[in-house]
Image 1 (tube, one colour):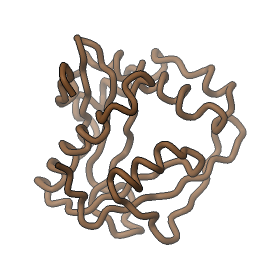
Image 2 (image 1 turned 90 degrees about the vertical axis):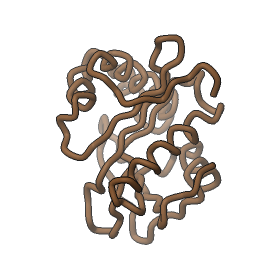
Image 3 (image 1 turned 30 degrees about the vertical axis):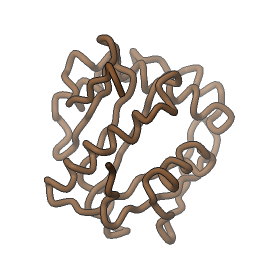
Image 4 (image 1 turned 180 degrees about the vertical axis):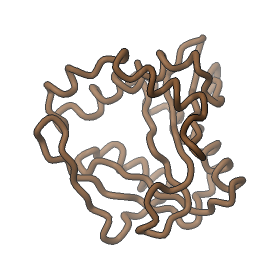
Length: 178
């Protein structure tokens, strides 16, 4: 993508990352997550968490940002798999983009860096959890990256009083992205 820089996050990116996180949740999960929960998502509530992530305070985790004209428009965080249950060594923890940055190939471009970094760490496969009702996200992982739903990977959690179902997509080996 012309004019977009993909780079490791810095601590001063935390406000922009938090803004993308909130905006992306409101856009992507409307109708999936209770509206009251989405309405209560304010970037100020997560700035310190993202500053810690950018400063490398989570062992093994990496945080990439996409920046355009000095503004953070997306981010992805990844590293070693958090759960060994499914036998994957790497994991994409989160991938969020401003609504206006979606559908332009940015996710695929960032995934190229994620895949290279995971492979360089000796993590030769990857898992990612996605809300089952997030059709756009699921299409990306299935069609663009060629992932398959991991057998037995369904799980549920509560958000704002609603039960949210997740499934995992697995990539074994890591996808070859050109």
